[in-house]
Amino acid sequence: MNSADYKKFEKKGYLIKKNIINLDLLNDVKLSMIKIMLPYIKNKKLPNKKNNDIDYLFNQISRNKKLRSNIYKTFYNIFGINRLLYDKSLMNMLKKIGYKLPIFLSSDITAIEPDNKKYLLNLHQDLRGIPYTSFRSAIIWAPMSEGELTGGINIYEGSHKLGPIKHKISEVNGHEYVEKKFTKNFKKITVENLKVGDCLIFSPFCLHSSIPNFGKKIRWTLRYSVDDAHNTNHLDKNLHIFDKSKYTTDLTNDERRKLVEKKNN
Image (cartoon, rainbow, N blue to C red; front, top):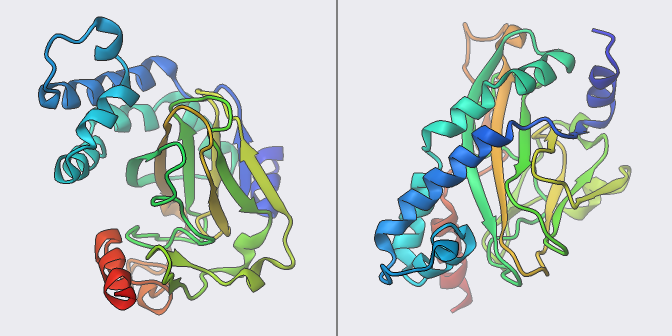
């Protein structure tokens, strides 16, 4: 494989691709999100503008923590998310970076709200909860919204070559993190202001962290984890390419936060 995208991805561990997400399919996902939330909005006489405002609806349901959590998890299973992944443009992108047999691992939708630091991620690798079957796995990070000062992601160019690193649990926010010393030989790239339709694709072994949202809108992001089944020659021994228990915890976000709260009280 000699394509420019392949060489960049192998060297840097990430690529930014413009106008690659199918906007019609993405809008179908957004419409599904709205339909999931609307039955739980108490004010049934909302003007049409509010009925179609994902941020407004999400802020309303977020007043109930349990409802917010369950709605959030329901978003992950929207059928249209898979349709979007298998769109021709994304499949062609994966082929250009050397994928011969793309397989789907997981997907989710994230919401980073203005001035809310609770869900910001520390310096880390994406090792938890995803059954990686090769070291050529990737995360597709696609913005669903855009706006000034809504933040983004810091990524350390070439750091994927370190492979999996032992993570610790922060005593500040309960999120996992990697010590800063691992970044010293790598250039920090700030990825902000991506447009809806663009995407960042990067190795889950790249060190990266959240950039806070100081804007006025929620930063909605659609994320996929994908892999190349062609690069799996170990399945007669193990499913995963590495033993995750050596590098990360199986504790959920809520369990880790409660553990930290208990220690701090």
